Length: 255
Image (tube, rainbow, N blue to C red):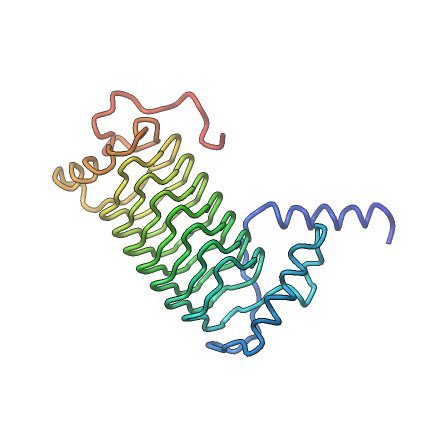
């Protein structure tokens, strides 16, 4: 292989790690399996993830727990970065202060699990269902939540800068003091959301669904929405201007 070909491979590998994983990964593991040699798998993955970048993406040491049942397991403080955890089941799992940067958790089921203080930057939650879980003070910058369902979960103090909630259904979510700057909520369904002291600078709430466009529903949404620190600088449709005299237009959404 020539020098140009080698450089091209390195370039594509770097790009792989710089963008969130939005594509589906083929999974040959049986549904609901429980890894018997998890300690060994985690050790091998740690060696792979901490080598000089870019590592070989096809290296068998990369953690692949797709289809696994990880309920009740403790992954706190463990480096799982760029692992494949898609289509997994997590009930009562512990990921406190874990490193989950770039992990694929697409199409998973997460219930009563803990991610407090974890690094979930560039996480992929596409088509994932999340219930009764805790992400307080976690970092989820550039996180993908496309077509996800999130219910009764706590993101207070979390950093969700540039996170994408396109077409996501959110109900009973606590965003108290969360950083939602430049987050994208296009076509998201929002019900009973706590925005108190959150940051919404240049966040996109156009085409969101807050229910029937009745005055009482709009007023209730605006009552909670305007508790954010900088809600006036978010992008909104006219129906939910919430009394602001003007909407921002000086800066593009992709800044």
